[in-house]
Length: 228
Image (cartoon, rainbow, N blue to C red; front, side, top):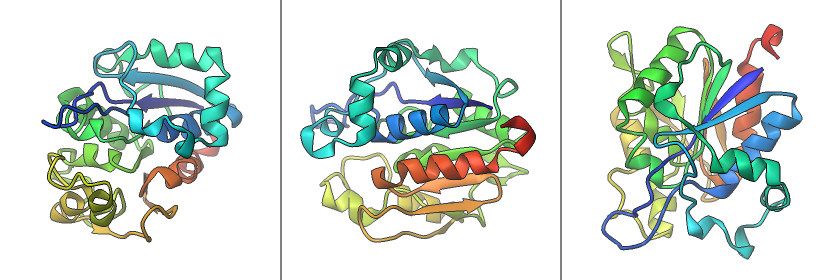
């Protein structure tokens, strides 16, 4: 099983003067979940190299078994520091693709034409697509058979109430919950910060950082047994 993880390269939090990027737990929990299941993992980003880490995700309050494991793992850090350029990749070698969140993807990956076409290629090849927290926003321009990918599908992602709780409702370019609904997605959510995952066909989405490992497991379950 070969899984592609796609991280953001965007680091500016709107016009706030603050930094953003990918959310640490949303990368490392899936990364180790995939590795521990015997998968090969490739990590990519639009610009390649070291992607920006949201500093808010790297503090004592946010520590988990996976973040501690990552910080003690030089091999994993090297993988992160040397991500592959996204535009150099195609869907063909991979069995599934996973997008971690953080606010960064709302600015770059949601609009990145290579990312959009890559997801469409995964869908066309009947390969699973997963996204957690803000990352379901990368699906906003993905079209299948002339309709938005999420139209009519059960989907979740960072909720409006969670965005309000972190005080960024007016900073982000769009609200994930509202956008998924606008596109015709059958959006559902749990309470703030509760783990919540939905699977519809070959699409697995998770609501927030607490959903990271569960979303990764849901994605792997969608990979055909012959590919595991």
